[in-house]
Image 1 (cartoon, rainbow, N blue to C red):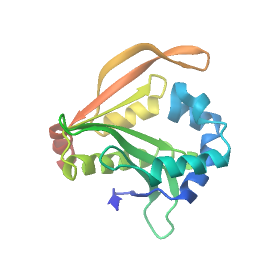
Image 2: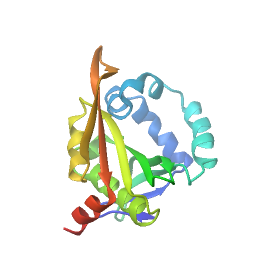
Image 3: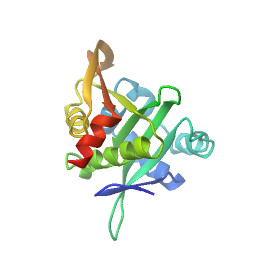
Image 4: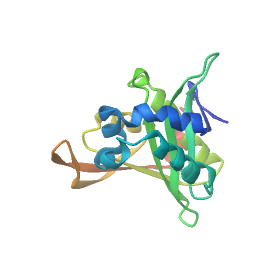
Length: 187
């Protein structure tokens, strides 16, 4: 199990996917997690999630992608979201990460930052990758602050790249190098 100070990253179970049904069908959660793809991400039946579990988790090739459930640590662990690495390039030693805290009771309290740091530590130290990147939409200020706390820097802006809430918004591209993270992680 991959652990942080507050969370542990566990293999995804079918019950976790079923639990995500409420999160994916909550307009605010879906918009923040999926951005411009919210129309595909939300308003899905539970049967769709069960089929997706079989395709995305059971048949997963961990050399290319890893997906985990985020649980709180402690006597009564609670499932609060998902996190993943994907698009692994073994030549360039890089990947893309994504995270979503679906349980609103855990928003804005550092749970996502802790989970992201735990995953980054894993891909840098265990998988020996040297670069991690992510994208988010410009209106997701809480996520951008969380990513910056983990050491990510804004590397680019795709102007009017996404369409959210009736308007075009920028997509923010952020990156983190292994050396920068390990220096931050020690301090």
